[in-house]
Amino acid sequence: MTTPKRMGAMIERLREGKGMTQAAPATWAQITREYVNRIEAGQHDPTVGTLTRIAKALGVPVMELLE
Image (cartoon, rainbow, N blue to C red; front, side, top):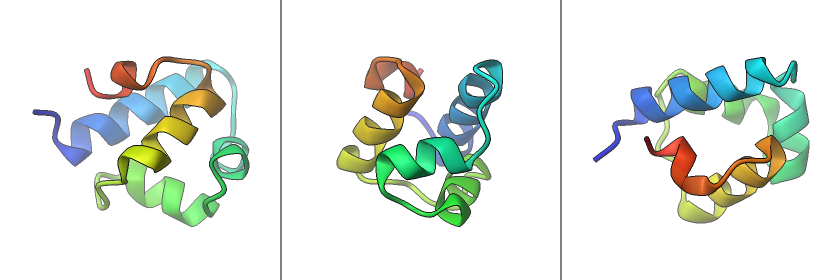
């Protein structure tokens, strides 16, 4: 099982690798930039729906966020 911190670090790594700010996936996922920040910091465990939208914004399969 993926911990929120590992998942957040993966999201951050993928986002930065694509040269995106936190605002870009936030807009696509219809969440706030602050919420993306808290997810990346491992402070929140987002729902499957939110993860799916973040994955779509990053252009990766949702399972990649959980590795």
